[in-house]
Amino acid sequence: MQSLKELYKIGNGPSSSHTMGPKRATELFRNKYKNADKFKIILYGSLAMTGKGHLTDYIIKKTLDGYEVEIKFDTKTECKVHPNTFDIFAYKEGKLLDTWRIYSIGGGSFKIAEEKETIIKNIYPQKNFNEIKEYIKENNLDLYDYVCLMEGKEEITEFLKQVWDTMKSAIKNGLTTTGIIPGRLKLQRRAKNIYENKLDFETEDIKKTRLLSSYAYATSEENASGGVIVTAPTCGACGVLPAVLYYMKEEYNMKEEKIVKALAIAGIIGNVVKTNASISGAECGCQAEIGTACSMAASACAYLFDLDIDKIENSAEVAMEHHLGLTCDPIYGYVQIPCIERNAIAAMRAFDSSTLSLILEKNKKISFDLVVDTMYETGKDLSKHYRETSEGVLAKKYCRNKYYNKEMEEKIDRDNSR
Ligand code: SF4
Image (cartoon, rainbow, N blue to C red; front, side, top):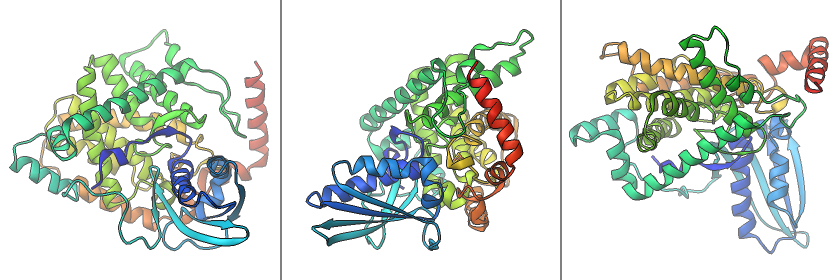
């Protein structure tokens, strides 16, 4: 498994696979062919189908500022290796200098086709959660010690502090900003309103829903508006983990130092999914993004409640198991509906998964590795309509139901003008 630095990436939203990954790959290619005078890009699969809504073309043009750039959207060619594929070509005076085929594999990471060696090294020898658990038990470590041992204590702690600071800033910005999220849906930001609107009859349960949701909305709305967030594990699912950590800080007075450690635990869970399955909505549906984010948040929450490694594993497993089969269906390709609300629901589910593990007895029959494997197989079986193409389910229904669509958009316009 790779470093947690490859999982948590600090950058601008709205999409890790459609903006961050293509941006990073384009930068690498541009730096190699600085002497080129023209670049051509052909986007395939999900990048071609939802690239406009996800701002893929915008970010590539911005990265290649100063050069002549041609971008094509090829929605017909089948992507046999990965649904987020693109080709990039560099030219000098009409002569082709080089071309790369890139796979944007999720969470801002990418692979170059036919590269034998991966550019990023694996620094964790263990390949799945079971191997990690055995190693930890044999060596009498806890999960945080294990991360420090593999990554270097000072270095990883410093990095995770930066991650946590960025998460807090995104929540704070989101809770104080109002207005419309960019894009055709003209969605009103809601985080501030949810946070401030305490109900007269508010019970402890409703308060929990209000706070967790407001924190998740805050980060997700920042992401949808192009603000700075942390992939956890992706941009689309970036609101779940910070919401749970912030809630634990505010409501359970968790110390900052312990929250930073909880980020390491969540990182291991995310890394196990990234290594053994996928964190890409285009590859395996939303279960790979929101499901993974929910598992990460549940494991962090379990750690903050001082649960042992078996219960941390249970929390992550429960969180993933009940997201199996979740489809990816962003309307018009924007990371807004259903993404923002989905982050809030997953934050609540993460908290509940860890508290359920608290009261459940040990010796559960389903391991985290098993549920990860199941998620991957389910994702591979999902029709492409349900994997970030905006061709299925909610996205299709919304866009095809013209009457409802028009009525609803007019209502949004009226609400926004008040
Ligand atoms: S539906 Fe889920 S996987 Fe798809 S873009 Fe939204 S958050 Fe990402």
